Length: 354
Image (cartoon, rainbow, N blue to C red; front, side, top):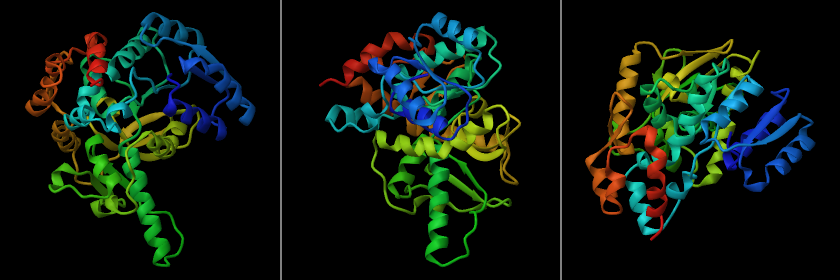
C-alpha cells in the first residue's frame, strides 16, 4: 500500500528477488499505477496487479483485505512525503524540522490507523509491516490496540552502515574475506541522522548503541565511519536494501534472519530481533533487559519533539517543539488525538507554505 518512491522500490525488490507468487500494488499511483505494475511484471515475470485505493477509507481497505487475504501487507503510504520537511530548505521548513519529526504525525497517522483498523476488523492472519515512521507511530498505535508487527528503516539503515564500515575495514586491512560479526542496534530516527552524517553526537546518550558479536561488545564508533550521506528521498534506497531480509523472513516459508528493526510490537525506537518461522522475537545482547532497552529508546523521543504519549494515544509535544510550532500555527502545537489526525493535516500542509 502506497506507491510513492519507497513503495515502488519495494515493488521492484520483491519482484526482482522472486520472493512472491503474486504482488498487489494498492494506492493512488498518481495515475501511473497500472503502468508501474505492467513494467515491473514485464521486467521480472511476477504476476502483478494494480488496485486503486484511498487508504484513508477504512471500509475500502477492509474490502481489499477481505477479498485478497494477503500473506503480508507492507504499508508504505502517508498523506505527505516526510522528505517535504526532512529535506526542505525554506526557512519555515527548517524551523519545522528543528521541532522534531513528531510534528509530522498528522501526515503519518491517518492512513496507518485506517489500515490497521481494517486489518483487525477482517482478522487478517498475515503480519503488517509499516514504513510510516514506525519509531514514533507504533507506540501511539499500541495505545489504540492497533500496533503493526514491526517497522523498517532507521534501525535497519544504521545496521547497514555499521556492516558496510566493518566490511570496508576488513578489505582495507587485508583481512581474509568473511561475514562481519553479528550486529545489534538500539536507536531511533533521531540517532539515524548523526550516523548518516558521520558526526557523533556531543552527548553519547543521544546516539545509537551498537553491539557486536554474540557477546554484545559495544562498537558505536563503527556507526560513524564512511562517507556522509545527504538527506533526501534517495535514502529510500538504503531503507529498502537494508530491510529486504526481514521482508523475506516474514513471508511464508521465509528464511530465518537476525536484524534490527523499529517499532517492534508497538515499542518506541529500534531493537535487535530474530525472525524464524514467521515469528518475531527480541534478540537482545547478554545483560541487556528489554525494559532497559525500551527506557533508552523512550529517552530519545524528546529529540523527536514528543514529551509523552497518553494512555489513549494522545501525543503531547515537548516545550521546545510547542514553542517552534506555535510561532507558525498554534494549533500544530496542541496535543494530537491520533483518531483526529486527519483533521489537523490541512494545517500542517498550510504551514509548509510561506
